[in-house]
Amino acid sequence: MITIFIPAYNEERYLENTVQTILRAKKTIKNLLLDIIIVDDASIDSTPQIIEKLKKRHAFIRSVRHEYNQGFGAGWKDAIRLAKYTKFIIIPGDNDASLDLIIKLFKYRNEADMILGYYINKEGRSRLRNIFSYFYQFVYMITFNIYLLQLNCVAIFSTQKLRSLKLKSKRFTISAEINIKLLRSGASFAETPGYMETDLDNFTPLKLKNMWEVFTTYLALVSEVFITSRNIYNSKPVRVRLRD
Image (cartoon, rainbow, N blue to C red; front, side, top):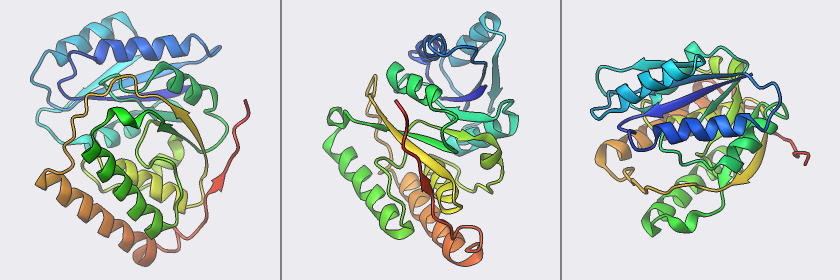
């Protein structure tokens, strides 16, 4: 049983295909129940109409509509709060995660507290985006002594553990905040590879607002992990080897 969070902001071109990819993955896993929550972050295209159509077609799809753009982090918090099931996964609304990766995450969902995907076809992204991503990951790895193949990617979590976190990030840095806090609190984890199905390369982290979010989130995490909440975040994560 899995709750799926689909963040959607102006995803009229891809949202239906994203849901179809999820349903195709579901068919490969016996007796798998899904709870899909689409969070529309104030889209100004036809995304709201597409969501309503999907809800009429599938009873297990629910939605949240933000009247103004609140950022990726707000969608995470809404979905975690509303989740029905014990496992929680985020799948981007742009259909970026390939079918094979989603199937693997579904398959291994009970092997650890966190099953983290990582993309192996990063050559399709721009050089600037890859440079930023590798630098971003390197800084987090060295600072927090956490070693992952990709810090921000499609992943499946224990819903209970997600709800135990006090999350502060408002935008895309919430993924790093979640991963660092869970791993530093001693969560078990495993990693599995997959492909990016599409690559829109909408690279926005270098915008001033996003750079400020990256900087402030990093400083806040350093403060929490090493000073104000160090008694909570002083454990080592447990790596789990996945079975074929």
